[in-house]
Image 1 (cartoon, chains in turn brown, red):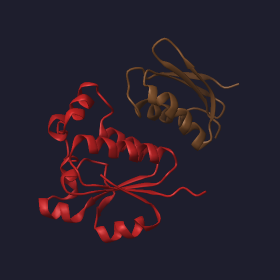
Image 2 (tube, rainbow over the protein chains, first blue to last red; image 1 turned 90 degrees about the vertical axis):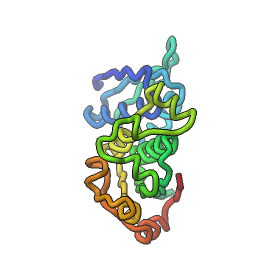
Image 3 (cartoon, rainbow over the protein chains, first blue to last red; image 1 turned 180 degrees about the horizontal axis):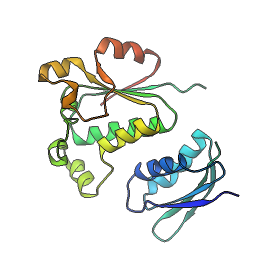
Image 4 (tube, rainbow over the protein chains, first blue to last red; image 1 turned 60 degrees about the vertical axis):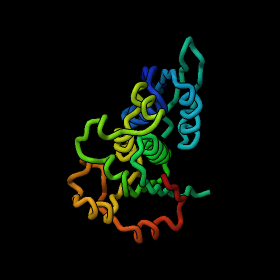
Length: 76
Length: 132
């Protein structure tokens, strides 16, 4: 099982959280997970769409108090 | 189904349109879709090297909101798209001639060169074309 890194992108607007996720994905290993915290509602749907398009794995999306937690696993 | 490349003709210098072009280009590029942006007319002025944000960005009500809320900067988004995906920017040769500018008057590491419309239109024949 890989490691999990967290990106706190609360307060950033779309596509900021997505860009931070992608930049971090380039640095981690296959199997590692990245958890993005975003207060931007658009990113909560945009990030899963991107994950599906480029064929990483979406571990889950959870609504927290004032933000979404989106967990992505690097698949390639 | 093969993804069509995206070609953006960016002519407006309005903040809102620079922002939209940057968002379209960067998100498409990081989604494994090749993108090319042809920058002409007033949009060239938006890429002036080292211009402070207050000089670079001007527009309507949304421009003010984008600045107040600290939306991602268009220049930063273009750079991220170039770094993380396939994104090329071309400066319109004609617009540079009219301004009397060379490429070195524009933001560093942003443009792949100056280009004429003929070549851009030819390359765009098999892609999706958007004008802003």
